[in-house]
Amino acid sequence: MIVAEQKPLEEIRSLTGDAKRVLVVGCGTCVTVCFAGGAREAAIVTASLRMASKIDGHEKAVTEATVQRQCEWEYLDEIAEQVRHADLVLSLGCGVGVQALAERYPDAVVVPGLNTTFMGLPLEQGVWAERCAACGQCILGLTGGVCPIARCSKQLLNGPCGGSSKGKCEVNPEIDCAWQMIYDKLKSQNRLHLIMEITPPKDWRTSRDGGPRKIVREDLRLPVAGKV
Amino acid sequence: MESEVGSLKLNIVAFCCHYCAYAAADLAGSLRLQYPPSVRVVKLPCTGKLDVLLVLDAFEHGADGVMVAGCMEGDCHYQLGNLNAKRRVRYVSKLLKEIGLEPERVRMYNMSSAMAKQWAEAVTEMDETVRRLGPSPLRKADCAGHT
Image (cartoon, rainbow over the protein chains, first blue to last red):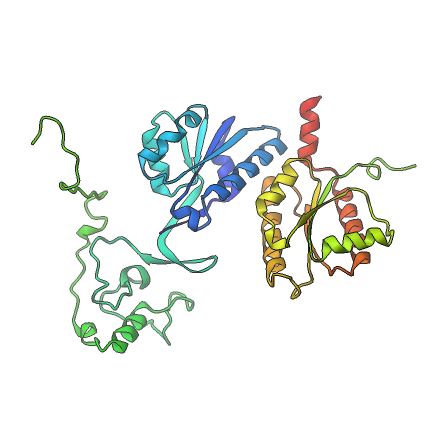
């Protein structure tokens, strides 16, 4: 899932500026399960903004709406009326949700209420950890299911480095050394020969090289009238 | 003569656990113990039911203070409900500060069903704290808006 954190209320208040009518839009998918921008969090931010603006003497009319998925335009149509009546839209979606809202409603002023942090998983209630960096060329098949791009602080392909000590990373002793984990996993599966293979420098063209990425699936595209 | 602050009519909402604080408040009544009339009790099945939004709602609708009263730590009828509430109260206290309200306006208490005296003392303490802080700025803003 995409993991995000709510911005401090002070920053959110500064982003909402002088707007009198603010619509807080939550998202019912990733940021709901990481407790950053779901319906509940939207209600908390809405109440907080209402109260804070009342106390400082510049009362705002703050309302809320939560859509199933903020990152798909179709789900945004149901809040068209509410967006139209708002001076400003505070999105509690991830960065994709904020942009989807801004693209779907070009006239609306859309600001983010969250900092989108990483793609990861919950380790336990209240703790999330990064697992994928979306590099565009997955090598997990060679590394025992542990990603050295997302989980090795130096993104090494032929680790570990000299900073690995007792299974921990020199960057932060709380970080597990990804290459220690890779070694342990491959060893336990009798696949240690994989670690002996030298991996050439990574082809980063699938990552951020060349600008924003796009996937086009011709088999899934809808036919356009007049074209075969 | 009663001071202006001393005569303030305060609204304190007490979210009480059914198994302990609510019973303690009931016992305090049976024992005819005196405590400030500013408190309004809302019974919860367990303080673990407490939601941050419940507390914010109370403040938004005119509460000057909120107390959350659960079982003694380690004695929760549902094992960990009061400890969950403790963390939520801490969170909401931080949130109140960000909103512009004093964080002391919300507080967690722990007591057993037999602790009627402690209930009366807790309400008295909360009443004194809130009286010292004065009415919630949200109520003041309301009054200003109507005049």
